[in-house]
Length: 73
Image 1: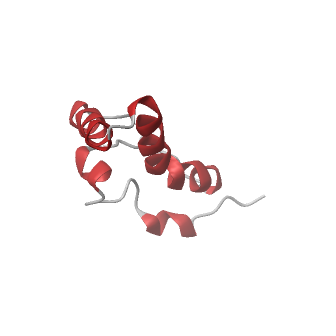
Image 2: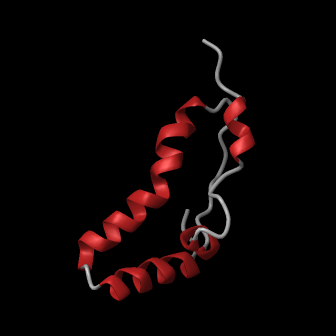
């Protein structure tokens, strides 16, 4: 889930770079990289909220300590 403030920050960054929709996609792809690769391995999934602080890189999208909790097959 993206907060309204996060969406505004993403749009602001894309406008600042003057890259249009490709810039928007690149910003969102970068934000989602961790979750795309690590979420499938987590035993306990939850709700992840992308805030403007996450977009700015001021806080992580999810607690990296959860990566140690891998699913057992």
